Amino acid sequence: MGELVNTITEEGTQFEVYKCTESTPRFREYHERLQAWMMFYIDAASFIDIDDDSWRMFLMFEKTGGPGSERFVVVGYITVYQYYAYGRETNRCRPRISQMLVLPPYQRRGLGAQLLETVYR
Image (cartoon, rainbow, N blue to C red; front, top):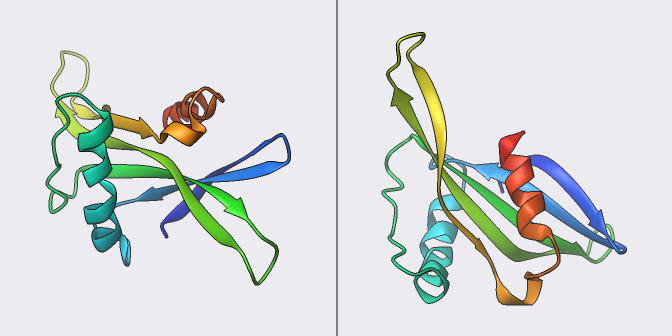
């Protein structure tokens, strides 16, 4: 789902990061289920308005299985808002990270840093 933007291999395990927007097929329904986890793990988390086309979501999945039997397990995700920043030099859109979540089984492995680095690139 979405556009593959990075593949990370760690100790023989492959992780893939996908960029999604509100127009990504099937993403709206998936996001509705996924964002509920934010309330459990992030203090003061809030739901985002997915109808606003300025939101970008980056999802990280663990890829298991071989060709034809691949499975993707969600590891975490970041929500990024493209806002218009006024300035003396230029007026342009800038990304702002809103929320980031790496699920507990995948924490303390550097995957959050890899996901953040992918967003920066």
